[in-house]
Length: 466
Image (tube, one colour):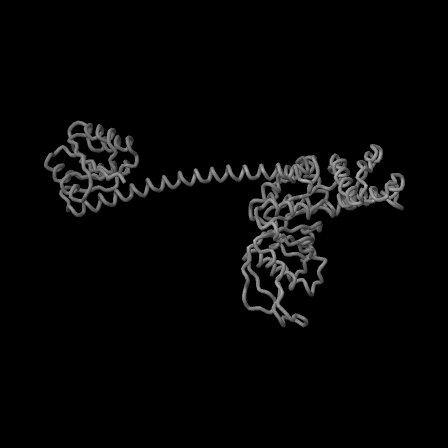
């Protein structure tokens, strides 16, 4: 480590010799200068940590010397040591950011304490600047690594068979998945039934770096309400009638991984408070136990229910909604990405062709064109079901007749419109809430014009929930 060097600037030889002696006895290196210009020359050629400067000197006075020393080395700490103290010189010293202002004569121990403190402040400033620079370098490195990881995830998602499509809507979803997957943010996936919310949840988990085997899906409406709390959080023996042994809950099973709460809008109100606490604290208490369990898990929730409406009806907690809505991903319905239908048909044809041992079955361009014109209210799930029947039966005419059995085209369109109206308000509100009701940002997130969003807000009479 380089030894600190003190520059003594005083035109009185006796004073500079005295100061140099007591400073060198303290184990510090000393350089002396009889004039301001000589001091500047030394400072330009040698690094001095601190300077003791007399104010009244021939030629360049002390105040101007200090100003120029600070230009040469802004980190140099300066102690004024003058035999002619004045209000004017003290104000000038403050303006030049001197460390201390001492009057001659002074106690040698006082002078040494000031020098030691000045050196300590300089060290702290230099170390702090070094730490800030190290943090900046590390931040930039991490930023580059995260950016590279996101690009890798996006390329992996593009090549994946799990989420088929080349439309702008699907491209945005892939981008959002790549953005949020490496983080620990809670994710709320919104979209109509059959749009692939569970697929997106799995993609987020698989791209997160968490335990690949710890993905636990909980279908909230599929579990009886009386058993749901036990399923989520587990129970101890004797917690309720029939509980003969301890059982770990789904949250504990997801340790190190991800909990996927499907159809979160159907979660009973009485369990929402406990779920909120578990998400926030990463701990919960099993039924019949008095000891809390700490578990590291990531939460992903999905729904096609209008959560804002449920909140207004007091059927869903607003604080739970905002906790789940760290990052929202809105899945577009199939009717809004019809260019993806041929790709999806080809994918499902291959899957079911292998399953039913009919790999050579083909679909005519006329049938494919007809499929592209359909509204598909059941979205990708309905399309997959159709292709499965097509491959299994191999009867083009019969399969086409079953596109909308016993249903007129008007009814099909009306049903799709009803499904659209059902979810559109929820999708709009999710985007508005994610952007804190910044309409321009929400319109960009939704991929629609600002004026279109304003018309829909007016059409559905949407208001911000406090």
